[in-house]
Image (cartoon, rainbow, N blue to C red; front, top):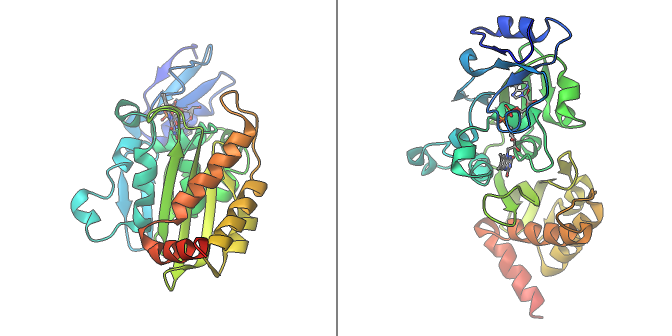
Length: 293
Ligand SMILES: Cc1cc2nc3c(=O)[nH]c(=O)nc-3n(C[C@H](O)[C@H](O)[C@H](O)COP(=O)(O)OP(=O)(O)OC[C@H]3O[C@@H](n4cnc5c(N)ncnc54)[C@H](O)[C@@H]3O)c2cc1C
């Protein structure tokens, strides 16, 4: 097998056979936005484009996203006409996708590449943690997002190919939100944060999941703060306490662009924005009244 070869398999078994064929460095090639910008010396590539992995499908149980689906496609899913009938998770996937990079980049970056080639700013892993997504591979393995992002996905995957992301639709009525913080709208984010929650009586959080990316290489859940928030009414005082809890719980690695304390402050500010929205205006009003006492 020669180095610097690009293989063009038409079927998954053929692609798997090439990937597992020898000691040479052979890498699956998806959108190429990491691989072709920083090419690995003497590597050969398996082009995944001919494997029919570009699709977004749903049935009554699951949303299935093929690994070669682009972030651009996710940023317009569901189509505008369908959005009027209500979007799953309040448009969480679309809001996350549209915040990634620029239009030309979004048209290249794939769902599979975004989760396997994990970077601190990779957004989809955060969304999959919120939505209990599963990662399906060509060897028939099914990894829950919690496991797949517990360490570098490449070490978990080995010589296998991600074919699909599957997301259960049973909780599609929950309210989702996603915010990115970056120096310019298309720059690599300093951090991003997502929430998925259920309200009762407009101002009480029945259940919530909170995730942030950009703090360390792995996406981070905030289990302690989530537990504190359960069944809490969002008064100004609880919001203050919870923001502090979130900032204390955050594990933040060094980042050459900004200080750790700066990230901690931003984290609190984004969290406030995410939970003060039109769905819990009641909560905002309670919080405002509280503040003015
Ligand atoms: C200017 C710029 C800004 C960006 N901003 C953001 C941002 O804000 N948020 C964000 O989330 N991302 C952002 N990205 C994208 C991110 O940094 C990666 O470039 C991207 O996620 C890689 O996806 P890809 O499809 O191009 O993968 P590739 O570059 O083709 O591959 C990446 C890695 O994943 C492996 N791989 C790919 N697909 C599979 C598969 N199906 N099975 C097994 N292995 C696979 C490859 O072998 C390789 O190791 C940005 C990129 C650029 C260039």
